[in-house]
Image 1 (cartoon, helix red, strand yellow):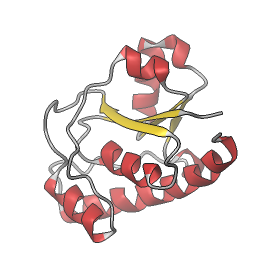
Image 2 (cartoon, one colour; image 1 turned 180 degrees about the horizontal axis):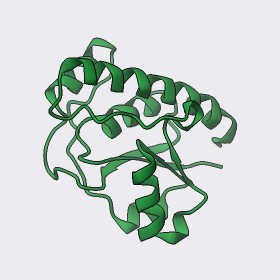
Image 3 (cartoon, one colour; image 1 turned 45 degrees about the vertical axis):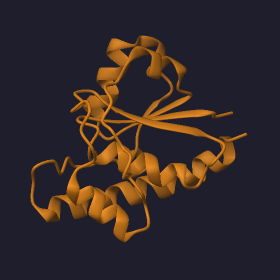
Image 4 (tube, one colour; image 1 turned 90 degrees about the vertical axis):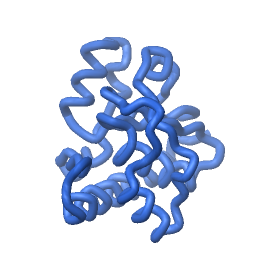
Length: 146
């Protein structure tokens, strides 16, 4: 049974808040949160991400970047990262997390690119990768949610 899902990226202003919001829209009974391994604490979502999300009916207007903490890691039933390096970092710092940390796009065998401070094409690619990962995890979570 999955009650809490944590979605992680680096700065917590692009990838993880977007993936988190997209997943949360499908599972109102699961508590979703996002955080960054090197979060830009207190910042809102990147303007490009806000625009892309809004175009697809996803709201990130109240998002504020949060740093990853042991409490969040320990209380999550499932942790989704954007990269292998993030997964390895979490498992190294919090060894008890092993077995519940996966990449969002693991089913495609790719890391979700970091579009921060890059051109629009990088945001488009990241968004497409996130959409594919979210579609996969929607199916997986449908069988695991209470």
